[in-house]
Amino acid sequence: MLGKSSITKINSYNWAVSIPVLRYVVGISCILLVTALMGYPLAYLTTVLALSYLAPGTKPLSFKQGAGFMVMLIIINTITLIISSVLKEYPLVFMPILCLGILWIYYTKKLPLVLKVFSIISVFVIPLLSLEPTGISALVAIALIINAFMSLVLSQLFFVILPWSEADEAFVKEKQQAPKQTEQQRFKYALNILIILLPVLLLFFLLKLSGGLLILIFIGILSTSPALANAKVGKFMIVANILGGLFAIIAYKLLVFVPMLPFMILLTLLVGFLFGSKLFSKAKIAPIFGTGFSTFLLILGTVTSSDDAAGSTLWTRLIQISIAVIYVVSAFTILNYFQKKKSTTT
Image (cartoon, rainbow, N blue to C red; front, side):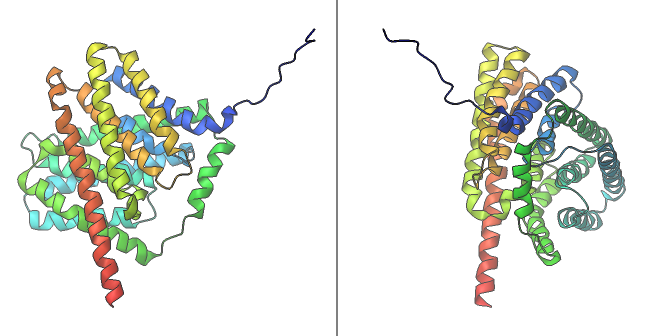
């Protein structure tokens, strides 16, 4: 007889370590579901903006922090709207003020990274739309505030469902270990970003390219990415964003065959886990996968929220975002090259 056999438990998966990525992916997918059902203006931005709240190492906000965040954003949007409405007829005055505002947003430490993302999008979009004769900039300013409020409330809800854990602390320690920048370094970085953004802003404002608003929004999101500080990861960022765009195209093509909201949420979950598993890792290029996932959400959101003819513009959207990524990465790399060359010669 073989006797009584015993089965021993060799290994088990510790689900506690997956709480941050589960909160990130499941949270964004559920936020997409809510915004798709509500269908308010620019609802596709809510999921993209919520990514910042659920990013690795980002702690849940208190009620005071959330209220302060909304107050600051309302103030920035109101000031931007007033200046745009009053000074849009005087470009030689308007553009320097706009540039000073952008320089301050990137330089200051008073605004957390999440608020900087919201503020940059507002400062880019509202002035451009104020040039339109229909005067829709006020409506867009209100829509941006609504999107900010929805992304804040819904993302914080998932910190209640999946509370802060020890697994999150590892990403906080990585942030704390990052070298602190001096005032001179922060000003230099902010000035470099302004130099990169200025040609794009002039092009959009002089030619009134409101049809390419997606490029401007994505450049705003991309310009706040910590990965830009390292020019070596630029090529990986380009690949990750193009990959995110291709996944969005594949998802849309599948949705044509199965045009159901639950199916779209399942596709988002799948793509989210593919990018999220890389984002919540120890790899040096991990942050770029967050930008890649935002590309997926931005393209899929703009297409699914448009009319039936939007499917024909899928590749156009991908090309627009690819141009934005390649431009920002290339400009930052070239600028770093000449600055290093100048410092070595002096």
